[in-house]
Every structure is written in C-alpha cells, then in structure tokens.
Amino acid sequence: MFKEFLYPLTNVFTPFNVFQYITFRAAYAAVTSLLITFLLGPWAIRMLHRLKFGEAIRHDGPESHHVKSGTPTMGGVLIIVSIVVSAVLWLDISVLYTWIGLIAVLGFGFIGMTDDLRKIRQKNKDGLRAWSKIAGQFAVASVIAVLLYRYGNENATKLYLPFIKNAIVDLGVWYIPFAVVLRVGTSNAVNLTDGLDGLATGLVLMVGLTFAVLSYLTGRIDYAEYLQIPYLPGGGELAILSLAVVGACVGFLWFNGHPAEIMMGDTGSLSLGGIIGALALMTKKEILLIIIGGVFVLEALSVIIQVASFKLTGRRVFRMAPIHHHFELLGWPESKVVLRMWILGGMFAILSLSTLKIR
Image 1 (spheres, rainbow, N blue to C red):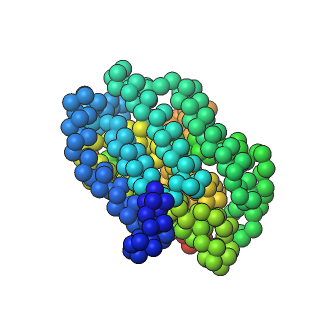
Image 2 (image 1 turned 90 degrees about the vertical axis):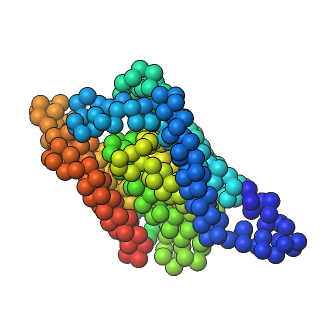
Image 3 (image 1 turned 120 degrees about the vertical axis):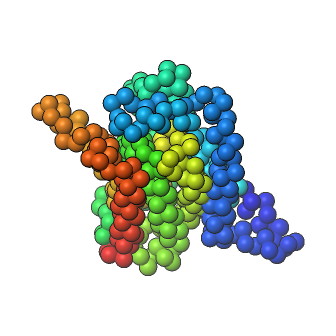
C-alpha cells in the first residue's frame, strides 16, 4: 500500500523513491510484523488469560507437559494480525501473489481458530471433527490452486527438481489436485510439529528466511537466468511476505520460548503451514520444499510410520509420535529437543540454498 500511495509522489519528495526497492520494503515488513507481535504480545496474553482460553494437554503425553495446562492458546491470532497488517502496508497490492498469500494466511488461520475455539469450549484436545477440518483445508487450498492455474505465468503448472535446470513435467490441469494436496500436507505437518515451546515458531522462522532468499532471486530476471531457475514476474514481492512471516515469528518467539507464556494453537500452526505451502507453489519450489521444511517432513513421517506400524503389526516404532515426543520420553529435556531440531532445520535451510548452484 505504501508503494501505491507514496512512490508516485517521488517528484514531490525524492526520498519516497525508496519504496520501489524490494529490499527496503522487505526489511521494514519484517520490522513492522515483529513490532506488532512484540508490542501486542503482553496485551494478548492478558486478554487470553481473562477469557480463560487455556491449552488442553493430552493425558497420554509426556508428564512434563501437564504443567502447561491452562497456558493461553490461540496466540496464532497475534501472528496472523501482524503478518496481514505488515503485508498490506509494504507489499505491492496490485500483484496477484500478494492476495494469494493473504488468502492462505487468513483461510487456514480461520480453520485453525474454529478448531481452537471448539477445543476450548469442550476443554479437550479433540476440536473439529477430522473430516470437517480436512474439508475446510481442501476448500481453501483449492481456491489458491485454481487461482495459480488460471492466472499464473507459463511456468505455473510445471514441476522442477533440485539440481535440474529444466522442468521435468508439465502437469497441466492435474496441477490443481497436486497443489491442493501439497498445501494441506504442509499445513498439517507444521501443525504436528507444534508440540514443544518455540519448536514450530523457530523452524518456520528459518523456512521464512530461506523463502525470502529464493523469492528475491526468482523475482529478478538477471539472477534467475544466471542461476537457471524459473523467473517469476512479481515474485520479489514474496520476499516481502516471507520476511513479514519471519518478523512475526521472531516477535512471537519472545513469548513462546520455553517456558511458553502463550501458545499459537492450530490458529497459528495451520496458517503458518498454509503460507509456507503457498510460497512453495508460487516460487516453483514444490519439490525443494521437502528439503526446506525437512524437519516438518520428518515429524509428519514419524506419525505416518507410527500409525501404519501399529495398525499392521500392533507395535509402535517410536515411544510416542510425533518424533519430538519420542526424544522427550528418552529423557531429553524439552529445551534440548527444540534446540537440536532448530539446528537440523538450519542445516536443511542451508542445504536447500546450496541447490541453487548445483545444476
């Protein structure tokens, strides 16, 4: 919005020229979302306490988690507000990708908020019925997939593999179901990871930084040609959105670090997972997302393996799934599990960026 209103006034006030630069707007998008989250955090915690919006803890979970019962949840509303406000202020609102990003954050956030409210009213961890929750996610993901298919550029339906410069296949109309499944899977993977103080927040922060770099390079025709990656007109705006997510996560981590004063709930985890999936689709990094969000993939796989093993053999592979609980039950302190997962997430981020030069 600032670009639309202030940049045209450059002839009147020359310093307004800075609003044309992606790097300037991206930096201040991060600062804006961080400050909103940081400044509104204490008020949000008090308000959630007053409303008695406390977290319900699984009875079969690690005993150390029982002390967290009643910790304010639905902090994801704070994350969503900071991202949306920052995005509207600093993004170019005439670019389609801006609105797709906002649809992802708000759509998946609404589903998560509905789920959280149901859990709070019922005072348990059940929330929405599985089918209705998945149906809502598929609906939002379908809207985004159709928009990309209908209004995206010539690369919209093509799939690219890391280390290979040319598209391996053009999915055509089949890109829509592929995109929907990827979006829903990513959102739920982040949701599964959000089980320890600061774990998902810190990992999304790293993923956001990675997409900020990838988006900026994808949106520059000179860098895209040099690195032999698909060029995305207007893709640079996604770097701004990515850093808005990073700023929100940094601000939220101040209150969400161990011991957490507030939890994001499904409101935050589904919305953050939704925006990660959207960034992967828009920047044509659908397959690379497996590496970028490597920890999220491991967390989701641990649940799939655990469920499949128990149903087929009656035995559990892990002491508890997702896998971060397995390490807790092995005796690792929560802070150590989170720190080591963050280190692993950082390694995946570096590995994903290294693929830019290996083609």
